[in-house]
Length: 138
Image (cartoon, rainbow, N blue to C red; front, side, top):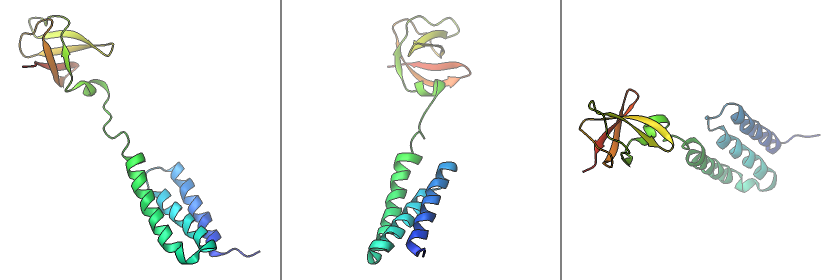
């Protein structure tokens, strides 16, 4: 039984793709897919093997970059996700400028730098401790 170069490259390519499942983030599927396609093309169309391998590697890198590695980079959790949001106050702020608001069924402490009344439209501009900092929308 004779093992040719194409079969070895296919095996190495598949192992690299499998290795990416264990240690994600190394762009190994690009190399693995390129080697696998190179091996397949060597078996059937040797003259097209190298261009197809390069093209598949570049295409894999581009797709992984946009569809896998960039997903979730701008996810904000907690109070950060509310910065920039405009809401209407449901109650007056106290003398020190503190109050409570409900956003998405969650209660949050707010702090305003000026006296604000129920019904005022305010914008969440930051976080100070456990309070959302708000300013009146002009």
